[in-house]
Length: 129
Image (cartoon, rainbow, N blue to C red; front, side):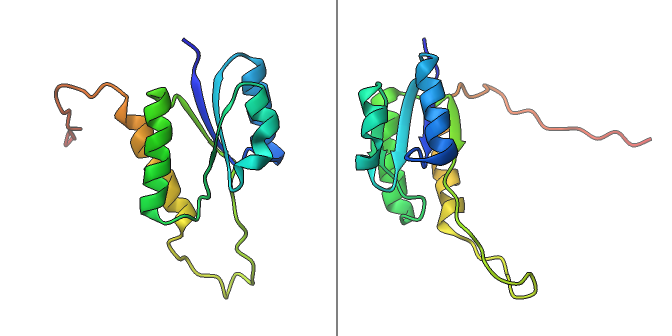
């Protein structure tokens, strides 16, 4: 069974290049972009395409990713080629929780949901010497 690749920002740059290579190798590709009409060439090569903007609110992200997960049953590889720029002097920059971070969490929740869960929990032990 071919691995399923979920690739964000597949309309150009690294995302598109990775999607084209994965398709050429016979992998199942889910290509996403803010505007999926820019993914027609990937769709014609066999990719499943979808609108997905990593800055969507959490409910919309979860809905889109859950729908995609439902179509293919699993994600084997997640490539996040989407990004944004934090511009400014380092002294003026500050950490702010951002929607792109939330998108990773939503996607990884679905990524891991198809994995077999261990039947027993293991707890790391420490040894005192």
